[in-house]
Length: 121
Image 1 (cartoon, rainbow, N blue to C red):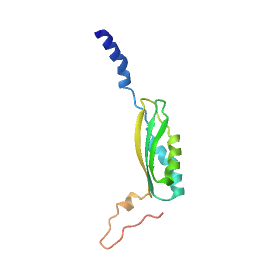
Image 2 (cartoon, rainbow, N blue to C red):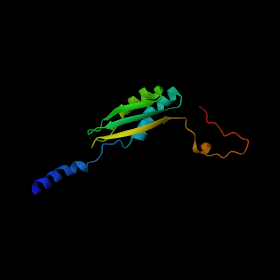
Image 3 (cartoon, rainbow, N blue to C red):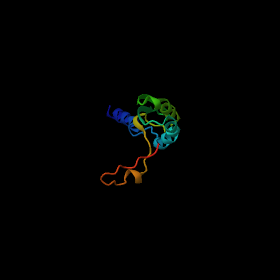
Image 4 (tube, one colour):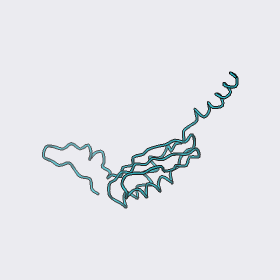
């Protein structure tokens, strides 16, 4: 019985240490895929996405909340995401669509009575 138990544990061990399914370039890919949507829609917004990457590396959208204007472009971008297979994993992303403010403008000190610079739209 003890020998059978150790064989069963060895058979189960590789699954416990398997590499999780992931999308290592998700940030860069989503930025690229969604840039035109931000330019087209113009408004700021935020979308929360919950998705799972299956063992073959295919992302599957589970839930999405937030700005309705951006939901269709986010759904399309999620389908185009290039992921790596492994043990299925669930992820949650908060995607914020905002105007870019250069760090030099954002960090510029203001003197009393002056209004901070506003980035153009």
